[in-house]
Each structure stands twice: as C-alpha cells, then as structure tokens.
Image 1 (cartoon, helix red, strand yellow):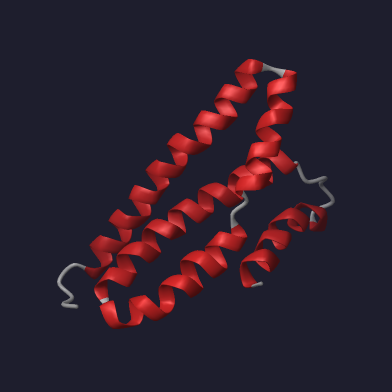
Image 2 (cartoon, one colour):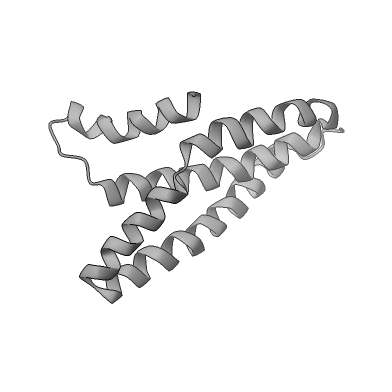
Length: 119
C-alpha cells in the first residue's frame, strides 16, 4: 500500500504545478527511481542478515514492488510501438539499460557508505 500511494503521488505531483502529467515520463521516473532504491536496499540488507529476512519482503516486494510499474511499462511500450519504432526502442531498451545501471549505482553508493562496518 505504501508503494502504491507513493506511485500515485508521482502521478499527481505535476498537477500541483498545474502541469498535465505524462504517463510515459512518470512510469519511467518511477521505474528508474525504483531500480536505484532496489540497489541501495539490496546492499543494506546484506549488512544485517538477521534484519534482512524480515525486511526483504516488506521493502523489496511490498514497497518497491508496488511502487514500480512493469505492467504500465509494457502497455506504454506497446502504445509507443504503434506510434514509432524508434520511440519504442528508446523507451523499452532505455529503461532496461538505465534501470540496471541505476541498480548498480544504488548498490555502489550504499556499499561505499557501509564500508568498514561489520555485519
């Protein structure tokens, strides 16, 4: 529920600035942010193994799983494919590549912060 509410917030935030939200941009933002936080969470959960088992389902599946939107990503990919194969390829592969890079970046940033700490 927390992730879903955060996701809803990303969709309505542009309305606060009197701007119409773009579903493709908000989905990309949510998915990329989710990848970054997933990388951070995975490393942080490895530090404290005891807490990791309890927190993994809550953080990774519960919050980040409901925050990111793979189903929205696939639907929007199909819509872009109908419009332009170039836009489709940029959107589809761009999110995958950038998502993996952000996952690694989140893990690296989190790992640097925790260097020297013992589990």
